[in-house]
Image (tube, rainbow, N blue to C red; front, side):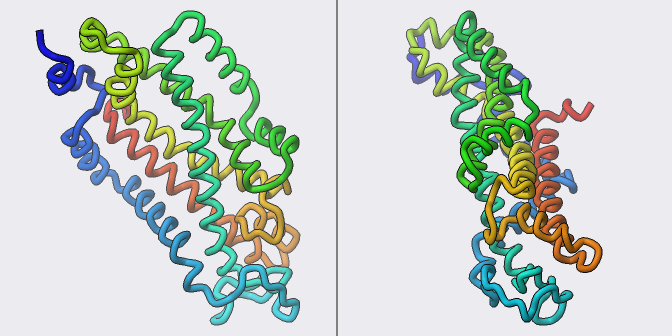
Amino acid sequence: MRSMTNLDNTVSTPDSQVIQGSSGWGMIYKRLRKNKAALIGGYLILLLIIVAILGPLFTVHDPLRVDYSTRLLSPSGEYWLGTDHNGRDIFTRLIHGTSITLYIGFLSVLVGLIIGLPLGILSGYYGKALDSFIMRCIDVLLAFPGILLAIALVSVLGGSINNVIIAVGVFSIPGFARIARGSTMAVRKLEYIDAVRALGASDLRIIGLHILPNIVSPIIVQATIRIAIAILIASGLSFLGLGAQPPTPEWGAMLSQGRSYMFDHPHVALYPGLAIVTAVLAFNLFGDGLRDAIDPQSKG
């Protein structure tokens, strides 16, 4: 009988949907390179990350400085995207707002992932009563529309960036839990899992070394798409006055402040809106392309 180490090293891909090892990820990368829409989304995401990290270092104007002598100016050489109703440079505020938007998007999805992934794995691996209990709790969260659930949580917790992250994170839990549960149930039924269990491997070892690596691909896809949803919901909450509070240069808050000047000075609301659309579109394009690269049959 082979030892546990030998069995762990010789277990290969047992299912067409399970991608494991460097060769599998290399194949995914080759498929992804052929998808022009996904590449555009990936480049836009990379650009957003660079702008969030390095952009504030190169801005000239203070994003919070109020100067009524320069209020509502049209785009010019000094103010590339014009100024808002308080005389603040819109371009500078958009640059600084990029880091806030990505911070909310990534961290809120991370919260949902940290909570939803273990719940889904435990539910799919053990099944029976534990599965029923966890899934009924997930069904309760799914019973509320996402934006309404987020509004309810932020209303209770109060309007702030951290509370928005918590609200959007809670909204993201069901998606991760359901995907992790389904993938875990599929991998748990494979023969090599029974072989590892027969050799005396503990449940923790099986989940950590065999279940989790084989379900990471759909989780990554879900996380990418969820970031786009998180950005959209967070911007919506700020637009309603429940998220980031003025004078924070958050895109949704900027869009809300600019709606009063839509007809006379449309640039005040136009550019924050375009920024939100660009970020959401980038993550959606990249997420869809990543899903097609991992599972080409999903296109059909």
